[in-house]
Image: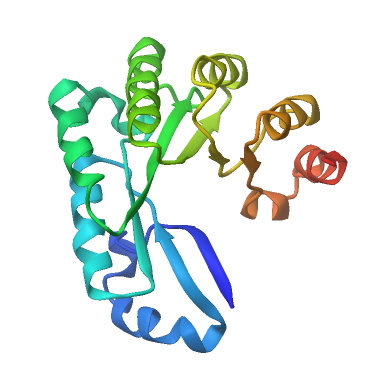
Length: 192
């Protein structure tokens, strides 16, 4: 039985066939799914979805693309949502400097606020980090009690080793299948 640790089953792309997809997961060997929140709105939707399926779990958080929504009021709402029995993580949170739609200082503040919430609640985190390796590591090290997964890892082998030594998990996703994925494949292969 497999556990899909990172899904976005609430994405509108699934609207036409979501119910048949959900019904067919078990026959494909998938026994559990973690549905990751990307904003306050999606986090609320994901919890409602998780209430309908015993094998579906939720994480709550604001992705770097939604970092500008994070303030004390949103953190307080996430704090309340974390009390739900189906919420098992904070995420998808982190930094994304690739497009820089949201200024870096706002992303870093949102990341720190959500890492502090994870520390307070004792929940693990799901981190999205893209082209922000130094800042990502710096913030992770500010919260040594917080653990989790860098779900779509693109950093160096050395950074991966540091994360593993700090008790973190590393996720390699479909990027390994891209034509220019040599660096990611080499990094994955070099982690002890």
